[in-house]
Image 1 (tube, rainbow, N blue to C red):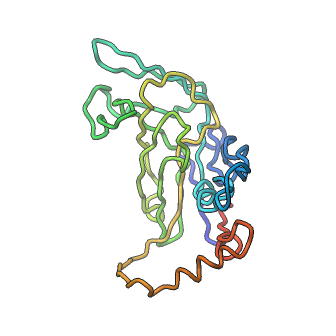
Image 2: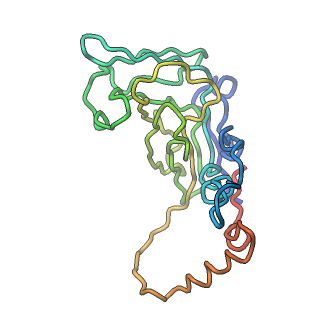
Image 3: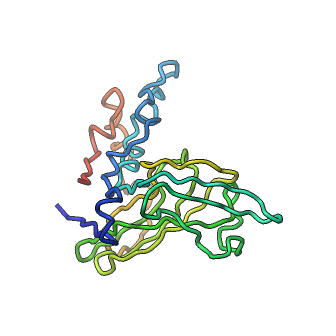
Length: 233
């Protein structure tokens, strides 16, 4: 089993900042409470996303960094310019402005549904990976319920376990408290391999036989016949 090590940024990090957790330990309440079947729906479409292994695998992929203290955010307009004010409850700062002047035009200022003010999460635990592995930093996957959008990036964390802040945008019009324990970004280690693509002809892969095998059970055919468990401890 490969090993990921998280390096604290400061001498206070270990005492004051929650460590990254396996993403499987951070499943949202709304997913846990979804019923597995729509009994009123005709066959074969009775299962809900609760029974979808690809969806669950994505939710459980890698590690989650949670917010380690409450953050209060207020969005207001001053002289027709959008301004975001924020403050935090803890001793270690979790959020800052991407630019000293908030109304600086940036690459993401035109994203529909999101504020044009670019903020950033201050990272405190940095992954150190085995040789040949990189870390994919991204928004918590399938978490459209969150009031922000964290941007994605890849760091070769076997050589460079010092990453710095991760940019994000607030959903337009959001003001309020983002509570401690909220997932703010996801970390997925992966091996750096070279790939080459090719195109097959129809029939080169017996997809019908594969599909028929999934229909041999009352639901969960992919899980029972093909799916493999992924481990992030």
